[in-house]
Length: 482
Image (cartoon, rainbow, N blue to C red; front, side, top):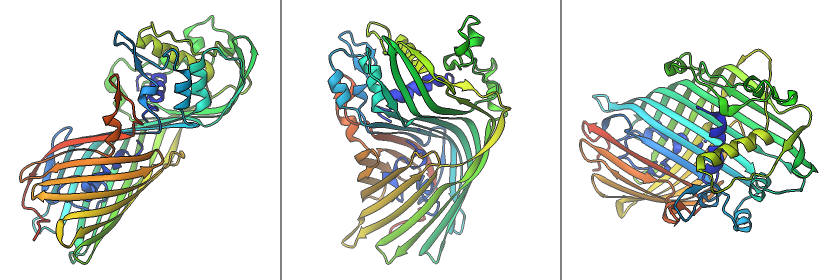
């Protein structure tokens, strides 16, 4: 998190794609695949068929959930240079493609090390994982993006629901699962959480009143919670420029955020520490039906060195509200203009109260599934998966997914699905190879956005995820077909 403003603006552009908060649950189409080594991460009761060991990046997932198109925010000129949403002549099209509330979820999960093994009797499965995760979420009202696009304005605006959050943490986990008479399977995972950074911002009732050409009076109610890596500082405008006007001197200048010279100092002490647990159960109903449910990330994180900032208690003046970015500028300079815009419209002043520690409940996920194998061909199955992602910051996501799985060869699984969630509908595809000694997988929970492009930029609603990995398997197949 080198520069908080850049993170915020990057998320804004990704909002055309949009912290998914489904981080642990990306690759959900693989939920019912017995040959997938990491199915226990969806439900601790669902053990894979073989023991395995995973190298670095053995399981990598990048996820985006959005209700907008990336091509609405980025474009290329005739020389192939990438630009922000300043394309002349497309104002009506740009505004038409916006939603009343433009939401964005972006996530990443990287497995640093993972090993899973069956004990000798073959009744218990154990797993040990070290994973680094990142989640970001953003919500932007249509009016704010209109302001940035139209440039010259004389209107008055009232904006609600501006929000942004970012969390990054590492987790060390141990899991165990077993069965009761081969019919009911239960499992649990205990995780130690090491928080790396945490940021949350929300602004409501932002009122912009035009008082003169190019001048607006602004009022609003906003706050920003910050838990930064050790040694990170955010200066005020007054500290940077002693000649700064008094009414602006206490405003934070996020683009000037500084990190310690020795980057290793950021790693300890970590700003957050916590624990969480996953619980799961599955049961076989006859030979062809399996039902399952799981609760993930039930836990708490305690964040230290809590800093909080607020928008000014009285009205503030916004000069040059128009987002006048010339396409002739290089995109890095366009980024700079964008950060200046947010510094002007959404100023924050640090609360001088003593830093304190705060405990937050982790974002929880509930999975429920039912999978039915076909009696005439038990290598073919149809499943329904429901997912509820419950976030204490009101970034909740709910999804229903229909999944078709087929295993044409003992070492090959193919799964396809259709899902509908808060961001719309999606279709998915997974290829999972699990021959003896190796598990190689590649898939996406939504591939249609990747099939429509405009001048090298995804043109569809960018609601997708990509998962890939390589694991080395050993031992006999504990779930071998009869």
